[in-house]
Structures are given as structure tokens and as C-alpha cells.
Length: 374
Image (cartoon, rainbow, N blue to C red; front, side, top):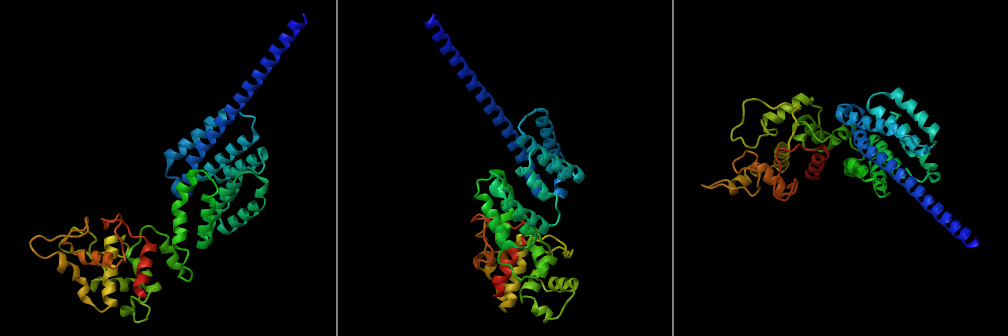
């Protein structure tokens, strides 16, 4: 009888141990499923947030998909307060993108009631503030108590970088982004905010430039008016037209067109200029920028021969050829593009092609103009 009791006891212990292990496995599996859902939601919402509310609102299909994802996750009940708090906060962050700020504020209050101090709600509180200086104050305050939480440092530094970028504090912004990327933050953040980080690094040495220049430098596409403003406000390259006097923008544009510093077209396939004059608000391509830059360079050096130097070498004879794959040898832009490339004012995008129709960036043009001015 004693032996039977011992056997039963051992079997009971084994069964209890097995049940405990199965229970742990179930809990771990459920937690993993919930965290996977939040990570998927993060990958859906963060790129939309990077666009800003106005532009993100046009991504109706993406916003609707994220909202459906949240609704599905809300139907999966969970006793985990931290999970519930973060899900509510993600819903609030999506509400901002939907233009429902009152709802976002309500969800923020609900989130911190369920899970005080959760990292997603902290970011929501920052995004609810429109003033970048005040956002920075919230970020610094939250960073001071960060050692009480296990996560959120990377996300806070992303928000710090964004706020500093808006405040034109570019060196600090670049450092904040780099700190965030090195923190082990989810890859979606480095993918989404890499362009902001690169812009901060490009502009980190632009202290002392005019306020209007900073606005131009932040653009991926610039106009002829922008090109003129950069050359006028940040260099001496237009003094031959202005003589130090203030010349109205429209008059300065007209003078530059009439004297050939701005081409009538930016289509490098033409062999003859069109009759229509360019517009000052016309987006500038790399080909157009090369023309503008090279003609200013020839003016600054008092050497008009620069404007035909390369076509005389490459484009004459029965079989004209071009050393740049996507620049025709008979295009009017040939000398300007080859001159900019050979003097390293501009570069080939892939070592072979110039990409003449690609938009010109403000920060790149300022770098070129300053190099010429020096």
C-alpha cells in the first residue's frame, strides 16, 4: 500500500509539473502574440507620423488599414495592463493623423490611467503639443525620469531630433537621431527618419545663414526664385548684376534670363531653344542647376570660353560622343554639365550617369555656390 501511495504521489507531481509548464508556455505564447501585434501596428503608424498630419491624411487606405488593425486587436481581450495602455495610446496617435485631436487627448488620459508612464503614451503626449519648443521641454522632463522605465529611450530621442530640427538646432538634432538609431530601436524608425537625420547632418554647419535660406535648404525641390535667393543672400556671385543694391526678385530673374544665366528649357534633348520663357516658380532640375552654376562660374572667372570648352572637344566631327552616359553630345547643356562634373562642383549619381532630370536639392546647391564663391 505504501508503494502504491508513493507511485501515485510521484505521478501527481509529474502531472502538476507538466500542467505548470504548459501554462507557462501558453502565457508566453499569448504574450508573444500580443507583442507581435503591437510591433506590426508600430510599423504601420510610424511612417505615417513621419509624414505629418496634413500629408498623412491623404494616405486614407493606410490609415484605414491601421484603424482596422487596432479594432481587431481591441477584440482580443487581455488582462495585461501595459499592453492595453500601449494599444490605447497607439489608437490616440492614429487619431491625431485622422485629425481627431479631442479623441486623441481622451485616449491619452485613458492610456495613462490603465498603464501610467507607458512609452507609447509618452510619445502621444509629445505629439499632442504643436510647439516644438514645448515638445522639447516635455521630452527633457520625460528623459529625466527615464531610468525608472525599461524602454522608450530610442523613441524619445527620435522626438528630440524632430523637435530640434524644427527649431533649426541642426547639430543637436543630428546627435539625437544618431543616439536613437544606436539604442536598439526598432528598424522602422531608422528606415523612416534616416532622411531627417541626413538633413540635420547636411545643415549642421549652416549657422549664420539667412532665415529664408534655411527654409530653402529644407526642400527636396527648389525653384529658380530659390536658386537666385541662395546666390544673392549667401554669396557674392550676383554682384555683377546688383552692384550691392537691392534689386526686386522679378527684375533679377528677368535680367538673368535675358543674359543667358537661366535656360529657356531644362529638357536636355532639345537642340533649339523654345519661344516660351521660363517661369521663376519653375522647379529646377540638376541639368538646369548645372547651367546656372556653370554660367555663374564663367562670369566670376571672366572666361566665356568655359561655355564652349567641352563641346569643342567632344561634340565636333562626324561622330560626336559624350563621356557621360545620359547626357547627349549635342545638347546645349553639354558644356555646363561636363564642366560641373570635371571641376567636381557636381558629381555623377552612380559614377556613370548625371541624372539631368532629377530635382535639385537646396542644400546641395548652396554647397556648390559657396565652393564657387570661395
